[in-house]
Image (cartoon, rainbow, N blue to C red; front, side, top):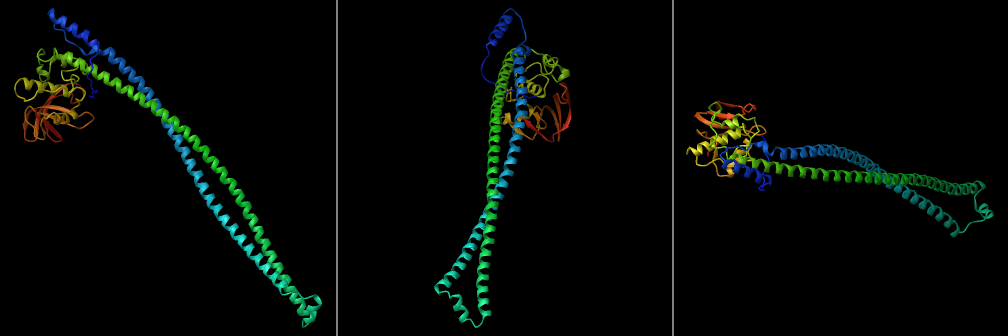
Length: 375
């Protein structure tokens, strides 16, 4: 079963409870402290945690919606940015074509200017002079038509290039407008995404606050459980007669509802770890162990025992011996067993809650997958 981390503070109600116990003992009573004496406080804290967890679940779902919108906006931003990049590349291409066309116009104008300058620099003959110097009228006509044709072709070419340049300029102007519109769209999407991100950040801060509240309440619950263990320990070990039908486990713990009492080591009754802790303590009292059972309340799940033991200097290995504690780390909480006998690769174990029913059982099993603690 899961355990809460425990703190050192002492709660005010404990004083009244201890005083009551002392007075009861003085008048000859032997009252036991039951786990339900702190139930009101524990249940109130659990109710707060339940409410906080409900709010946390709602915030988590809401955070998922915010993140989904952020992802969708990012996809749109990526698409718009890709369009902007493509159109900017086309802008550069059109600008290159416009520049190339201007260069052609400049070249043709220079050609035409050179031709006109040549004619003026070398002097133009009058029509009569041209006729007089021509061999015949046909030569004169041919020369004149040639000059006119060349000039017309140059002028036509300049006009075609100028028209193309004007068309490219119009296309570039339209493209400039489109790119500017896409940039505005990108800015709007980025602004919407920033707003969603702010909402998500606020949501996450709320989740952190609820998680902090849940953790604080869990710590308080653990402290209440620890106080129960301390009080119960005053009357548990030594006063309880073992139940032979339950592996010697104290009758008061064995006959109570599962997880309704806390044993002397901070563990719930009728759990595997409670039973093995009791057996370790009994063996210590009988001189069979070098160490008594430590208080492992709050860190007492079976799959934590081998790490707890190593930290406490308790040997842990793969060799079972009678009286050792067998630990399986399988599952969410693991399982703890008391080794009664060893036969090769098999061990005879006594245990509680092996079938998750809070009952005692015993029998042979293989040592595969187990480690053994030697107190």
